[in-house]
Image 1 (cartoon, helix red, strand yellow):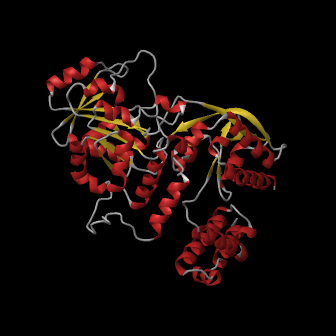
Image 2 (tube, rainbow, N blue to C red):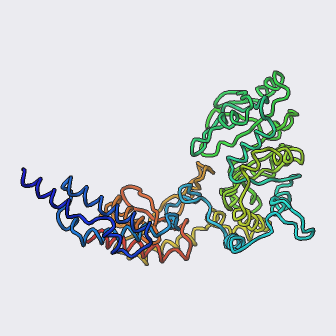
Image 3 (cartoon, one colour):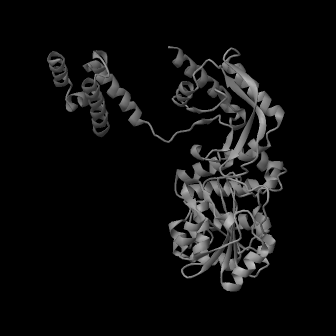
Amino acid sequence: MGGGNDAAAARLRELPAVHELVAKLGAPHGLAVSAARQAIEEARTALVTRAAGPPATDADAIERRARGLLESLSRPTLTRVLNATGVILHTNLGRAPLAPAAQRALESAAAGYSNLELDLDSGQRGSRQAHVDALLRELTGAEAALVVNNGAGAVLLATAALAGPGGAVIVSRGQLVEIGGGFRIPEVVAQSGARLIEVGTTNRTRSEDYQRALEAAPAALILRVHQSNFRSLGFVEDVAIEALCGFGALVIDDVGSGVLADAAGIPALSDEPPLRRSVAAGAALVCCSGDKLLGGPQAGLLVGSQTAIKAAGEHPLARALRIDKLSLAALEATLMLLRDPARARLEIPVLAMLDADEGTLNARARRLRAAIGAGDAEVVASTAKVGGGALPLLELEGPAVALAPELDPAALMLALRRQDPPVIARVHDGRVMLDPRTLSDEEIEPAAEAVGAAVRCLSR
């Protein structure tokens, strides 16, 4: 027993000093110190716990580990991945991929200075909202528009600007929802300083429920919230936006997913509320996200009356929530595509994935299977999802490529995530599945190469 402890102690003393290892790495000092410290600490832990033998803790092994860590620390942690999950608006993967036109606009805005808040005609200070205001008015029929940094921010700003401290906000109990990340409607109302008035029940809210609340609080506004990532089915009832706007109160309509392409001829979009309908109904403000079914960058859109938009733009929160120039450039380019629904359906990736026909998907699946190898994969029937809190009940039928059943799913998923670029797949019935709906034609070969590398890694 004592001899083992003595041997371990001796080997601990033989571990290299941090400065010695740093000198060998020949890298920027800060990075080299971080890599050296971690490599030495891992070796020390292995010796103390006896988790590894001499090959893992000798000087050469420690230096190799430090160099590996150095390479890892030198790479950005935010990187492109290949989405083979079949979830189109995958929140963990950044939701909507951008159209080529939006990518070009973003690159142009990032390359140098821009006229973000400069009126080129007058030479005077302008508004960043001017770059999208006319487009949003054209696409929605609204009198005015305002854009902030995300959809949650749009709802918060709208509520704070129109209700504010001391005001009252009427919400159906069936719409007191929690969206991803703990974003809860009651807490949004509380943050605005307004008082929440709940009406109706979880499954049924009628016109008279709103009318009674307005009789008790005539100055209250009505907030309608799209259920987003769930649906109430069965014995349910709610009040249409046209009826809500007919009560004479200010109405904020959070439509969530941002359907601006309702004329694009995509059947799946018919179940999501379009902005144009709410504007036409007379809602004071209509809010939505930019990176869901609109197909653009993360943004929060507010469209509505001149008076309501002016109140939102002058509120102190507007500055804290304002959109940055890169997102604004990508949003403008996306909105320009949406002027032409047929073109939008082809060039905006989210809309193209929703609209992909059976022949296209089957051809893509066969290409992927062939590139992987018939012995390691087969084409099977599957279903994709929209994700991102949009159309939660919709199942998009189509093919998927199922990898060999003898491969351990957890180990294979990890190996796929460690490729360059990483491939994010899903497991169904004990098999790893790759869905071609969320892979572009250009991504088929890289995905197949990643599968081959991952399989070889597991067979070593």
